[in-house]
Image 1: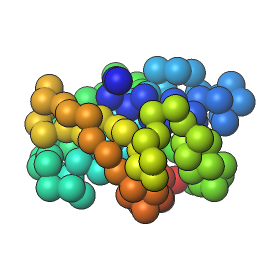
Image 2 (image 1 turned 180 degrees about the vertical axis):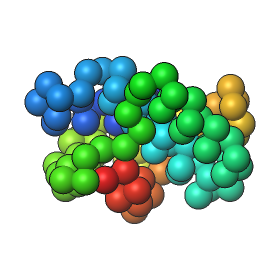
Image 3 (image 1 turned 90 degrees about the horizontal axis):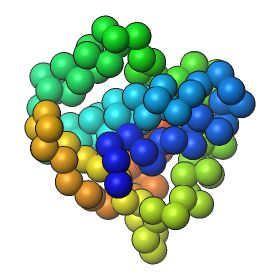
Length: 115
């Protein structure tokens, strides 16, 4: 698994307005926010990642008009899902990642923060 990959669905749902790298950038920010929420990553490190991605011209959020329901529905069907949990990469620090399971409620919070 790769950091940000669970959110690659936004590439498909954007109908060409986002490329793969841009979708992964948004996913990396979402997974960093989830990592902070889970107490694994500091706000400072999440902010640093957010700034670095933005400074090289990558998007760090979705359009305010994004279809949250469509994104959540697509991710629910993802092959990385195990039982009722999604497998994602969460960060314990810059360059320190681990595969973790999150609930759909966690996913909904992450999507809400991006749109």
